[in-house]
Length: 143
Image (cartoon, rainbow, N blue to C red):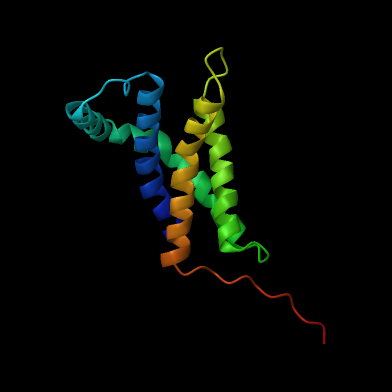
């Protein structure tokens, strides 16, 4: 249960901030910006934080469920599990957010993919580091 709480709290927060950074970069906002403009970015982030949680909670919990499933597979170590969860979140986020029109490209695909990859890997790492994981059951030995 703690695993899902970590994913639910961190996923939308980090993902929402990365999504805001990605969309401002894609719009050309960072071409000529000053320190005051960066302050406006944080104001917008905190004003839209409730929407990050509204629309990011369910996808974060889905990624947490995948992490929970992979924990029970004995052959998959924690680092491989973090990468698998991150890659799944990368593909899910890039397919969800990036467009498929004439302005799409590798940069857009990667930036929107990182919106899912970074929160998933950080959440999975925190769960591995600070929350006791269940041990996989050993196969019964024939007697």
